[in-house]
Figure (cartoon, helix red, strand yellow):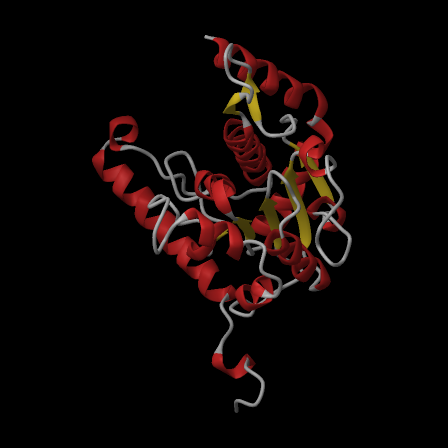
Length: 261
């Protein structure tokens, strides 16, 4: 149970040190969702997992708007035309974030959570820059040990954390892996995915508490094994329709394109 023990220590460090940041993130999310808007969520590489954990899945509810670019995340083929070389290259391409954000209405009443363990790649940095420039509150979920281990390579000389109103530290070590193994020079067993999904669910639960206290009961996607078939179908439909309504509101409309009538 070596990795599990180290993972529990990691979660304990997050619990001890990130209370203020987690509470602030939940407040930001509640303000956006409770006001009828969305919290955009974004990540490249394995940081996509935090986006998927937020919504949609069992125990989640609408208001979180996932944004994931497949070119930066779809590399399970590993080698070949959809391999890791391309994905790792694309997430460093300057200007891609602006092209992604051009699809959306960037409303100051919305918010964003951006996941990046290193916080050093161009796309998540520029996503944060673009969203903050548009007036949105930005939460960064990153590893401060990892991001400060080297000088930033982005032309701005900045890291993701520099563009966030709230920074949640994943508390993972440089290189991410948690365990040393006799006979191996390099550690194995990364901890950032566990840390990220733990942060996601802490924010999700705290935000739900705040939303209910404020008078809105969100439709929570729930298993038929828990709530029965009819209720499960009702909740799924309500959650999807509510997400569709909010997502449609933030898509740029033809009238918003320069030069179009």
